[in-house]
Length: 558
Image 1 (cartoon, rainbow, N blue to C red):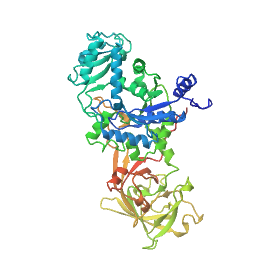
Image 2 (cartoon, helix red, strand yellow):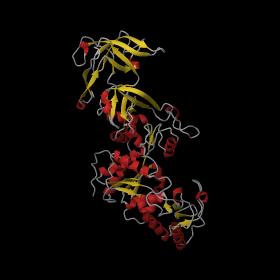
Image 3 (cartoon, rainbow, N blue to C red):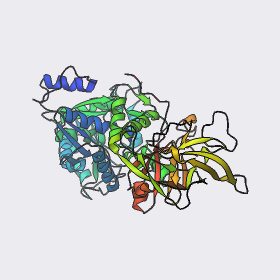
Image 4 (spheres, rainbow, N blue to C red):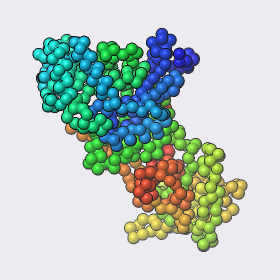
């Protein structure tokens, strides 16, 4: 029997249920699965399900399956299959040789449907879709029996085989379970098990023109694979009686158990597949992996790490009640993960020239700079320094506002890793915009020299002009306007017009020229950035901001 963890460890309600099943001998092992439909890209909510199911299997020394629930050929694509596999692998959920397709079980499902017919528990119905809805009743009124409910076993077997053989047109007949049209649970009012669809399937080709419905297929898939605990989200709670009915009446020796948990709802993001598809089709985003989305592919491209997603899922926890999680909590987790892992580099997003008038012309010296002040193990690098530098435009003001501590005429600041400089004057263009700041430096104040003669209140970052690396920078905000919510009154998305700002020519220290697609860094004062792997593959140097450096968000106390 699989060993459970010590009682002293904190348990969520799913773990408590699994512990009881193992102690009571209901199961002698734990087997979980993640069963996505390959009709779109996975999003952050799916990440919770993946990590929960994989984490349970790992904790109980059990097995974890990745299964594609490919029972609906109308929306499925091989592109989505490959994207999902990549996402699950990236998150660290190891499915090894345990990759399955629901469509591989179509023969078994058909046999089980025949078994239900033979047991008098399923029948072929000729009602149209509209008539079936009408006969089903409402939440307050019972349904009515179909006039075809009393067909004999022999007639149902003949009709069902003819359905399989392509005798009938789409929508002309369905196979329904015979349960209870007066059930208070509408899902149990003779649900449809099979529908006719003359469509080619991405795995089985043209073998079938008869496809199972999800509520019939899913429990059989779990049972075939020996899944012990079918962990799913709360919207399937009302479907559990049907799940149990199917596995019981199709006669599986060790029926799986369905347990529901609360879905992950993230504020002010788009997760609905049809909405994302519309954004992609309309060119509002540049694909399912656009960094402003919260698909797993988009988060990976933006620079989120598997560890940050794992931390996020852990901090959200597992509960039975639906609730929304602030997007800032996800940002908190990526900051926590990156702050000790990534080097602190210098990049100027809105550059103006700083000329140090008393520094020797043509001279370049190399200064030592720590890569991460909080993590000495990341070492240091050499920075070129010369007479002409770039600084941020907002690091100089000709007429400073109160409490301004950066450069202005007569004021002295430290150049990070370098010297004290004092602003002297500035040059402007025809529109009055500052283009060049002139300053002098004090060679006695070199960083690391031990100089203690005086102190300055401000420190600014810089990039040496002649060796500067030029690249595009993209600044992302939420795709949705937070102040107005996700949807407009007409149901359309309330898009934020400022969700993307492109800085076409930022200047960076030369070491960043060696960055590869997917490499991430902390840019001093500007946030954490990632070299966009999609653009890098196209030969473009684009750095996208993962997250800003600071937030007022605090992790909720449990």
